[in-house]
Amino acid sequence: MLCLFMFGGLIAFTGKAASASCKLEVSPPRVVVKYGDSFSVNCSSLYSETQGMGWESTHGGISLTTGVTSLPFNISSVDAWVIQPSCYVNLPNGEQCEEDLPVTVYQMPESVSIAQPLSAMVEGQQYPIECDIVNVAPANHLSVYWHKGNKIIHHDTLPDATQTPVSKTSILNLTAQRDDDGMPIWCEAKLDFGLVEQNPPAVQSKSHKVTVLYPPTFTKPEAETVEISASEKITLNCNAMGNPMPVYSWHFPQAVQEASKNENVNHPILTPSLQFPGNYSCEASNSQGTSRKYFTVVEATRKYTTLAAIIGVFAALGVLLVIGGLLFVKPDGTFSFIQSKYIRGQPSGPI
Image (cartoon, rainbow, N blue to C red; front, side):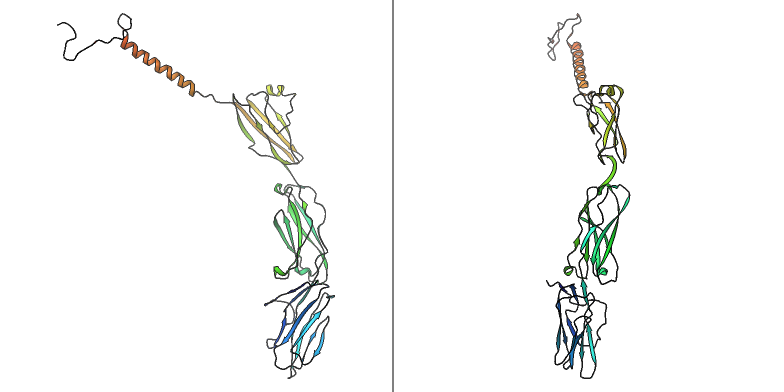
């Protein structure tokens, strides 16, 4: 399969530059070819007269050919790592000019792998992780990308002027964080020749899952105040995140402690069978440490709104009774609800 990349436009390269007065055009002006594949280019002269043209090369050169204004250069199978073709033209005045063709021969890595399975990491500590790239060429075009989850976390280049295949190692120094726990991590090797869309595809290692050990951390505040309600039982939440998974132990007021002897109290969320006020605490522990959480259980504040309303009603009735007594009780202590009649402008009795 032909695996040939032809780059147009002006591309900087290492090699002998053609004279500004040398009217030769090489198409394509640069070749990137996989070892073992073929490529073909053409050299055209813009001179009206020539004595002949040819190709000088460390691999597959073409001797002087007369009577032509263009001359192709073909290699059916690249079997050398360094090829330096140069197209030349001989002019009638005895001068000669030439144009170099930059050729890059590459080989994709035979394998890309993380050196060894990742062992469990401790939060906060730094660990070197190695990515081995075997038999790649040329190494000075090699880039290594480290991935964690869906992010690129490190980019590495490994300068090396060797043009034949070499093996390289990229090292990632990873500081373990609890958010990394369970994350996949892998490396990939790319050969970058300048134009992304024409670069060979990357070669990836297998992914490895990161395991990070860290002490328990509570999902809710480390100190809580809980009120005892007449209608609901209290629930104490000691749930914590940690790796390895935490184990739990509880401490209660003495009265509750005695009553809970036969109960399983190793759960992160607890509903005590006896609802007593006091100080409760729990411990969440694993191999990385122990965390403690405290609960202050108090009786709920009584609500006096209803009682105040009832008292208010009775007080109002009492006031009404007092007023009624003043209006309707006779001097002899009996009640009379008949009011005396009085006509304005007339005496109320005999004169």
